[in-house]
Length: 407
Image 1 (cartoon, one colour):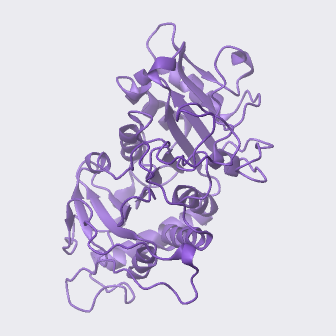
Image 2 (tube, rainbow, N blue to C red; image 1 turned 135 degrees about the horizontal axis):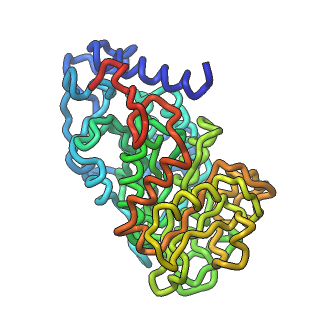
Image 3 (tube, helix red, strand yellow; image 1 turned 90 degrees about the vertical axis):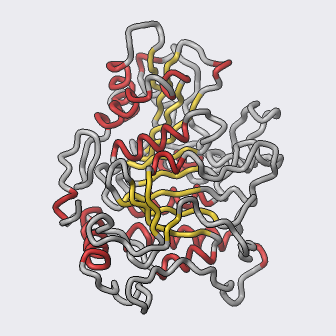
C-alpha cells in the first residue's frame, strides 16, 4: 500500500475507533464518560532557551463558536472525541481568522527550537491523526487544536489557532477526508484582497488536504527580510520578515515543510492577487515557482484549463513556463517565494533560486476578476489540473468517503 494511502487508512481507523465506537482511543480520551478535554498549556520543557519561551496566553479568548461537547455518534463520526468541537460553516468561520494589521509590528519571529517543535508536531498530526498528546504539544507553542464539523460539506476538519495575540503565527486547517493530493496556501491573505475567502472556498470545494493562512499582514513589521527579492508594496524596496512568502523563519513555512515531508508528491498552490492599480492584460500569471520553459508543466496545464473557462475577451491567463507566452506577460513568477524554492530543491530557500522545477508547486497571481466574479473558474481549473486521487469528497470526485460508515 502506498505511504499516502497507509497514512489515510491509519487516520480513518483512528477516527472510527475513537468517535464511532465510543472507545477511549488508546487512552487519549478523558476518564469521565462523555467529557471533552480542552488543550491545556504546559510548562516549557526543562532547558529551553529564552527564544523558545512560551507566550503568555493567560486569559486568551477561546476560538470562535467553540463548543466543549462530545461528538454525536453519527454527525461527528470520525472526529477526535478528546478535542473540543466547533460546528458551523467552515468557509464563514475562516473569514474571521486573526491576521495582524499593516504597520502593527504584529509579527514575532519564532525561535529555532519553536519552529522545529512545531514542524515535528504538525508532521505527527498529519501522519498519526489528532490526540490529546498532540493538543498538548501545540499548547506548549501557544496553539489550540480542535475539530470542526462543517455544515456545508458535512466533512470533519482539524483547526490550529493561536491562543496569544500579536505574534502573527497563522491559522492552519487539515482535512480529515481529503479528495486530492493538494493543499492551499494564502501567505498574503489580507493584503491580497479576496484570497482568504478564495482559499477557504477552494479548500472545501476541491477536498484539498489543508489550508495555510498567514497570521500577519505582509507589511505588519518594519524589519526587512534578508531573503532575496524586492517589492515596493510596503513603501520600501525590500521584503519584510512579516511576509510569510518571503521569509522562512515562521510557523507558516514550518507547516509547509511538514506537509511536504509527509506528502512528498502533493501539489502546493500559493494563492495571490495583483494590486488593482497595477493590473494589466493578464487575468492571471501562473508559474511552477520558476521561469523555466517547460511546455508540459503543471503550470501550463493550469493556464490552459483557466483560459478555457474565461469569457471571450482580451484578458487571458499566461504561464511563466510556457515558451509561447514569453514576453507577453509581466515577470510575476514567484521565483523568490520561499515555499516554492523549498519544493523546487533550492539549497537555501531564503537566498537561492531553485535549480529545477518539481511540478509540486503552483504560484497563482490573479487579477481581481478571478478573485471575485470568476473565482469559480479557478476552482474548476484546479480540479481539472489536479485530479481526484484520494477517497474523500471534492468537485468531480467519486465521493467514496462514506465507505468509512460515517455520513
